[in-house]
Image 1 (cartoon, rainbow, N blue to C red):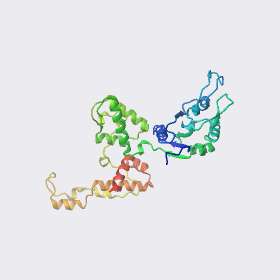
Image 2 (image 1 turned 120 degrees about the horizontal axis):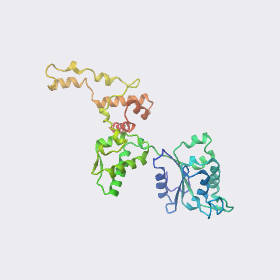
Image 3 (image 1 turned 30 degrees about the vertical axis):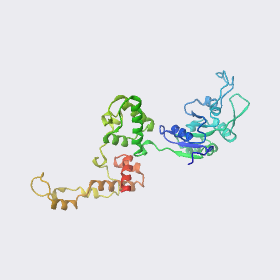
Image 4 (image 1 turned 45 degrees about the horizontal axis):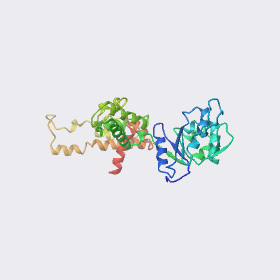
Length: 333
């Protein structure tokens, strides 16, 4: 996608806290409109009877509290970008007026009679499925096609794999600098918790967690004891040490066969006596490395789940990011 597209509308979709407004601002800063205003409105936070005035402005006396003329976001964003967050929350009647504004680049202030003209690029965002909202009759189809020109899907934090650690380090060092602390990174155990946690609040939740760590602790490396709730209650063992989950139907039984009773192959005598080279060579053909077994079980589970990694992870009792990390290693081998 070219950042130099001046007029094409952008539609960002993602869960709450994934950074939709940050993404919108970043796009604006890279566009040819970068020196013009970026004005943001949250359609879910403004009462619907005030939303029209917030967008288009009003004239004095248009309603009880309109004691002076007021410019709306459309005029403030002239030449730049107007960011409409949670656009699917907009009242259906106001959607018709917004559509006309997009088509003609003209509007009237609330209570006014003069046509105002501006040059605005629209960037919209929602945490819903906009086309599903169209099908349910809550979002105008013609407005959808006007705004949904360049779609951007922001994945939730739990699906960003090792990017989670980069984001966590960014916030950790940023807040450490602000607070005069010396934090620079995480222990391996803390990283495993960060990577396996679901982060329901996404990036916004991670920001809060990293700030808490910096404010309430001191040091250079964050260990699990420094993690605040609920992360300090979420302490997964490394994947190879976790108990085996119920095996999905069809998964190879190689793991069970290779972990059979090894006592048949033990030499008689002291149990603590190390096996000789001959015995080790004999056993090596019967006992497979745990990493091989783990890979076979995970890949079989993914196949049984028709490629759905999150479903496979849930059935195996591990996190989806753990599978993504392991697949990256296997694919690069």
